[in-house]
Image (cartoon, rainbow, N blue to C red; front, side):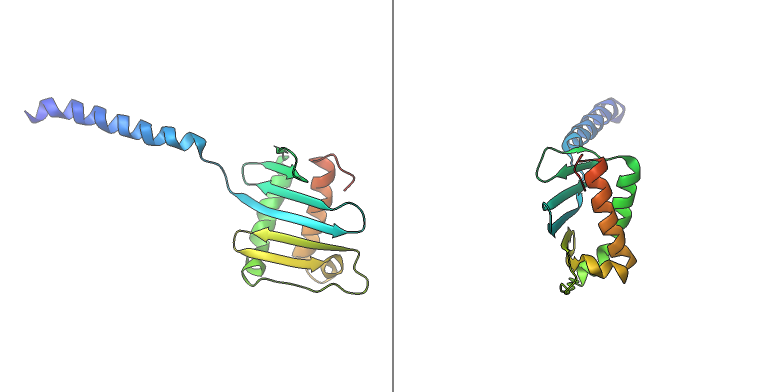
Amino acid sequence: MISRLLPWAAAAGVAAALAVAGCGLNVQSPDLFLLTRTGQGKPLRLLVNDSGTISCNGAKAKSLADPLLIRARALAQDLADDAKAKLSIPRSRNTVAMYRIRLENGTITFPDTAASHRKELAEAELFAVQAAQQACGLSG
C-alpha cells in the first residue's frame, strides 16, 4: 500500500516545488539606494536597484554597467551605519550641492564640502557623476 502512495507523494512534492519556484519568477531585487543631488545646475535623482538597473530622474530603468553596480553595492554597505544613525551634515558657506541618500535603514544628507573629510561621501559624489554620465547620458 505504501509503495503505491510514494509515486503520488513524490509527484505532489514536485508539483508543489514547481508552484513555489514559479512564484519566484516575479520576485524583484531590492533598491540599493535613492541618491538625490540638488544645488547649482539641474537636480539629479538616481534610483539604483540591486538587479543592475538605474532610473535617472524618474525615467525608465536602464542597465547599469557591472563596475558601477559593484561600486553601488559597496557604497550602500559603506553608508549603512551612517543611514542607521541618520547622518545629517549641515551645509556650509562654500556648499555648491547637497546630497540625500535614502538607504534601506535610513537617510543621510550632506553637502559636497563634507566629502573632503569622509571617503565614503566622496565615493557617493563620484558615483553620482559617473552614473549620470555613463548610465544616464547626462552631463553629470
